[in-house]
Amino acid sequence: MANGSRQAVWEFFGAELKRRREAAGFTQADLGSRVFVSGAYIGQFEQAIRKPQLDIATRIDEILQTDGIFERLCRKLINDDRYADYFAEVVELERLATKICEFAPTVLPGLLQTAAYAGAVTVAANPFVTDAYVEEKVTARLERQHILKDATTPEYWVILHENVVRTPVGGPEVMARQLEHVAELMQRRTVWGHVVANETGAYASMTGDLRLMEFEAAPPVAYTETSFSGTLIDDPAVVKRAERAYDLLRGAALSPEASLALIDSAAEDYRRCLSRT
Image (cartoon, rainbow, N blue to C red; front, side):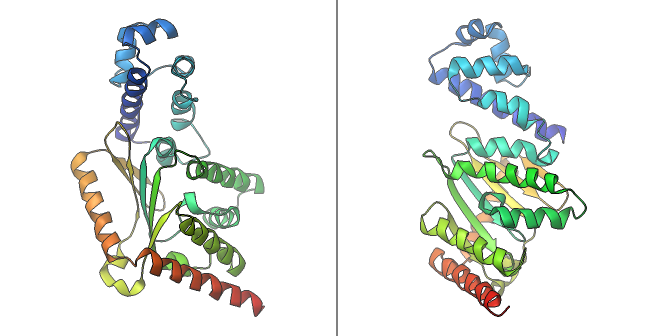
């Protein structure tokens, strides 16, 4: 994990701690006395100068009634082997996001994947692993989707390259059900989705996954990923460039109605394949 990415996450930890503490009406000294550290320590946590131990993070959750978020930031965000090192911090940040925007050029984003599709993707990337390994990865991926089922759900925007819709990951049956799932999420307005059609040309040739995340009381971040690495970006100038790139993609994409029609049509094509077998 890059030191810059790690530091960005601890800075987010500090900003979120400050926001939650102030919302609860505590000074740094008030909170410190309740979790058995000094107010100065709390200030150092908030400035990302000092990193709290797990037991302190757990006590902070108890006092601020934050549903375990600071414990998870310590325990899972930094050291969760269910996720690649370069992606682990993103998992926790997406739980805090008020808005998530993704561009997926090759594979459906994890937040939209069915279990069968996630399993097929995992096996394709790791053909010699055990079934237990695949199950662990799939379960972790599906757990992340709870953020789309909560009453405080973030806005979730996704732009799919048409290749994502047309590539038969796992075969026709898996794809038919996967696309039906995406269509259902769009129809329920859980997801605001677009497809960049192949005939769009240069816009459709952009490569690399892109994710933008916005937060209630912290600056936005961007995350880019290739096959073997990912980068969390908090530099305001670079994030702004990523936001502009996403806006250009959204402007070039099909409308939500046309995108849904394309997804429905592709799902029907896969079902026809099944009927011919």
